[in-house]
Length: 291
Ligand code: C2E
Ligand code: MG
Ligand code: MG
Ligand code: MG
Image (cartoon, protein in one colour):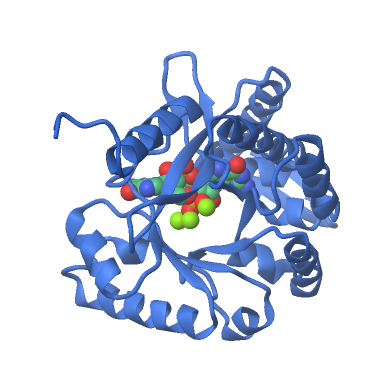
């Protein structure tokens, strides 16, 4: 048994707890080295409008590739990065990489797409976020609104007044803001009313089975009505089949992302698939019809 003094209290650790703590310390070290060696990758997942099917934005999702070709899930390493503070430099790299990606999109004639970046509480409240985004837009010559941010409710609940101030500044600079995973946290109506937001993202937990699970259907209908009542656009996450997609479209949901529409993938793959889609849809696109 190990004991450690913390805030004047003796904390008791049993062997499994100590092993878990050691594992976390080791993982934190690996993450730090991975960032130094630029081993992270940023994948993109398309977000489609439901009225005409076109891609409007791309969500940037972190990937940590391993030697065996697998990836460690961000759901596992992001919380650890938040605890250790590594999220600030890591989040900065994500924003820089997103800015480089947007410049690449512009070079390919796809500058109308926005890139939506997940931002952690620590990063939002580090108070240099609006300045960092302004610098990146200037440095890379990005159009206003090229980068967007996604925040979760837990982010906003920690220090709601500071969060609101930063969010207002971001929006004044043309950065649109999504409330991510909506409905899974506290979902306080008071915050929804007070916060400057552009999008609500319906969590995958409610979107799954929405076409045949009456409870999920009720929740999604209510959240869509709530969001629209507040002048927000609604984005559904985790759409995996046609039945879910058409249900959401029928209910007036504005946008969607999910494996059905496109998996998170490297920039080049995503650009290629959007170019194929545009070529297929464009009037006057090359066809086999000689007349
Ligand atoms: P999120 O922001 O809610 O991202 C959506 C997650 O759903 C992603 O998981 C995506 O790969 C997954 N997803 C998309 N479509 C489908 C689908 O049809 N079916 C299923 N089963 N899953 C789908 P991912 O990439 O593992 O990321 C997990 C979470 O990690 C993200 O949730 C986000 O909160 C966080 N995260 C990812 N990248 C970053 C980052 O750069 N910074 C920060 N702070 N957090 C990040
Ligand atoms: Mg997100
Ligand atoms: Mg989400
Ligand atoms: Mg989610």
